[in-house]
Image 1 (tube, one colour):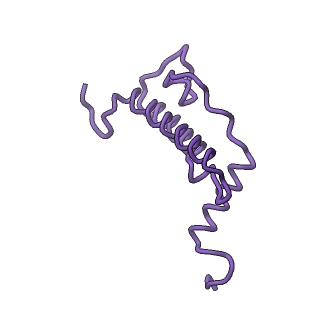
Image 2 (cartoon, rainbow, N blue to C red):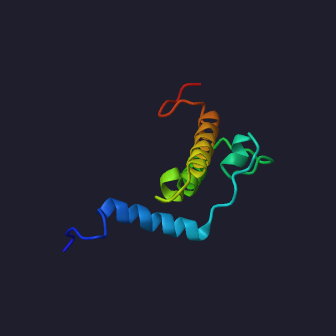
Image 3 (tube, one colour):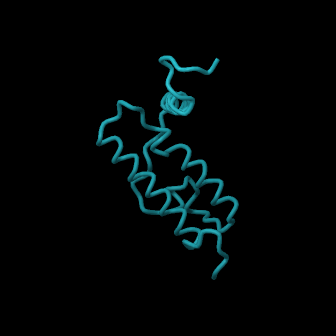
Length: 107
């Protein structure tokens, strides 16, 4: 009943399960552009300023490219660096589109 054994902690099992789930779907490569709309999967030809749409796109990308989700315990240092850089690019794109004012409505 939830005891020890070889299964690891609940958190370890959850991370492994998520990693397997997302690895099986294999995330497409993140665009090499610096365009924040493209990085978040939004159409750059029809840029939106709708905060809810931007946030929804950011969360989707964040879940898709988060290093904890993508990487397993056997990941190489290069894979970890790449995942961290991609996630930082996604965060940067979100900050650009939201004005970098998390939780603030400054103009």
